[in-house]
Length: 113
Image (cartoon, rainbow, N blue to C red; front, top):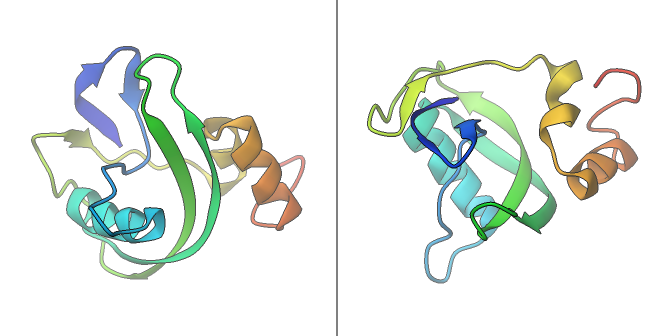
């Protein structure tokens, strides 16, 4: 998605949000994808975590599959537009640890980043 308001150098990002008290990163990924993009997804696997060097926030990447819905901007305060990344280019948008995990678990294939 393209953010409605840039934060630091962050203009585009995957759906993101806070983990609620007592919740998991996977639950947050499912909730935030529905809230931001209108898609009902199922969390498949936590790919990894890192601390963003510019914001200092802990960031998690979770692989999900779409169960239902049609992608659209569902949160106009945060999202300016949905921007799709071809599956073969997703790896470029992930941190090194997450990219390595996605390749090792065959969620991404080498040469298709």
